[in-house]
Image (cartoon, rainbow, N blue to C red; front, side, top):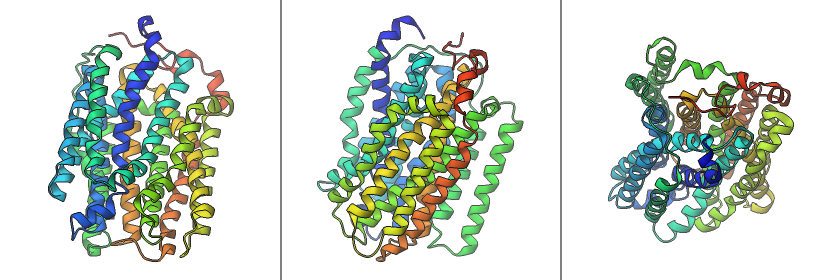
Length: 472
């Protein structure tokens, strides 16, 4: 880390965390607005309006890795600022959208900007901090993302009461402030002319695989089985093609070198698994409160708030928890809390609204789980080689987006064409959350224990983890 940036590292973290907040917020801010959007764009179905969530997650997932590769080559600072401009312009387009297809197209454009922002934000944050402080920096960065994900429905609920268009319009002044502050604060990391091209084939395979699988799951209630099975099979074939591409291509969109680290593999698998449950829990709770329990949007948003509050309070300290108990132990503890939240909802949700005794404890359990799981999984970024720092961060962010897209699609498939008037129908959502918690715990077995964190030498950790920057 250059010495002249040492005193500004917290300002760098503040700027990149602001962008992280915006990009994650916009994945979830529309959750609470789905019933309103169905009315405004009638006769839209739940599957129709759910594409406002899914198209954002799918496009981000497809473009994150190519965007990370571009940033590693062209410079993270330049790409970060360019991504902000695209994201802000697309947000304005969403706010002015006259029809649902135009709004979905605007969300696609937003996702392009977000795909550039996510890997560059974590890459800039990691490069600004010495090794001993990176756990804290990742914890703060992840805490902001967790707070944004949970605050999305809360903020959305407040704005929807006025007009749903404000959930997108509010991004514009925030982007303007961040763009104005960025050039004077962010480090000039410089371009790395490695000569490596960005693999378009890999990006298309990711987009096709994720898009087709999510389409099949989202449209499952409305499509005949033959069509659903065909689209799902096509998506899985493209996913297999992507795996072959990474293994055999001379210029893969994902460097196989990233997967030589067991901790990095665990981070990718854990984020996919966790965010399937995250999406199912957040959207399922939102639909339960605003649907069968008939809670007003603002009250439902406030009811979800304890989750992100708990996550935001705990996540900045997750680095210390991991240092004491190891990342494996920290993730396992979080997965246990996540499973407890699902079991609490399974046991307690009934026809009579019971927020204080059922939803509130589940939100707190989920928030504590989030504060432990997210930073510990994203901390796998410090095992990436220095030349692949943004690409490694992109892959971890892609895992989050992929899990989010699958979680929304699986939940929509589980609920059918629309939320049932019977709250017990949401048991299927809580079972998805429980399964995701179990898979997250399984992924944690590949994470590092305390002893492994303590005995790793700088050479074993690699240049990034030891605090050395890559030389051009």
